[in-house]
Amino acid sequence: MLRHGLQMARGLCQLLSDKFSVGLHRNIMKHLLPINATGHAWSPLRNIRAVTQMAPWPFSSSQPRDYSLPNASWSAEMQRLYDQYSSMCEVETEGSEKKKGAWRRLPSYNRTLKYATGGRCLSRMLQAKARLFTRNIEEQGAGFEYVVFINKEEKTCVCVFQAGHLLEGPPGHVHGGAIATIIDSVTGTHATYISGPVMTANLTINYRSPIPLGSVVLVHSALDKVEGRKTFISCQVTSSDGAKLHTEATGLFVSINVSHLFGA
Ligand SMILES: CCCCC/C=C\C/C=C\C/C=C\C/C=C\CCCC(=O)SCCNC(=O)CCNC(=O)[C@H](O)C(C)(C)COP(=O)(O)OP(=O)(O)OC[C@H]1O[C@@H](n2cnc3c(N)ncnc32)[C@H](O)[C@@H]1OP(=O)(O)O
Image (cartoon, rainbow, N blue to C red):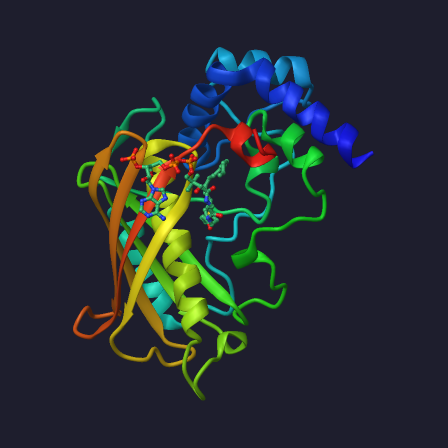
């Protein structure tokens, strides 16, 4: 059965091949944009057509939970920073005219692939029970609470991150693996926004000062360069006022065709 599923997946990937990767890339870009409320029941054929014709709306009609919105576990500092960056985001007016700042909040789901056009089919073929690592702790505030904003003009990202009690490493402080995870998530999302589907090839991290559990930090991600399939990103984690440097990192992200995930 597994072999049959993989054969189907490979067939689908070959069928969609180049157009699919371009379509998915564009739809990922749209997928990273704020939610609107249109959509229709999903069907593979319609979705394939939608992908190749660059459908304006990549989501199914059932609206998933957006984990990057404020919840009761957010501290006053987390909320303050969210409000600060939100106030610099562009807004759509009634005539769908956009105005105000260059920032944009990226929504975040625990099943990213499921809600992207074409991805729902892949998500069924992959593991139906799979969930995004950073969004799979049910208790609000216990794990990764974060929201990512992207600045299209500067090609930078900022993530406001509140580290919950389940992320402990050294007593009272955040585990280095959890810090690496949030860095990989933010820089990986940033690279995806810039270059389409990518995988992390290399992540180099220097831990400069420990991050207290429960504190709010900023993860700043900047595009260094794009060379062919390689997107280079650098990253700094600082205290929320920017005064203290906690972590520095550089990452290399290599563009892939989605068929890479099926061993093609
Ligand atoms: C992938 C998802 C697609 C769908 C996405 C949908 C929606 C996404 C939306 C939002 C994103 C949401 C959340 C994001 C959250 C988290 C992100 C997490 C990301 C990860 O957690 S991801 C898991 C860990 N990641 C791996 O599991 C990778 C395993 N690995 C491989 O799969 C291959 O290794 C690969 C693909 C990396 C390359 O393989 P390949 O065969 O395609 O390419 P090749 O080897 O030819 O390298 C091409 C050029 O990169 C250079 N190069 C390669 N590797 C290098 C290295 N390590 N150091 C220095 N240079 C390197 C070569 O030297 C050559 O350079 P040159 O062209 O100059 O010669």
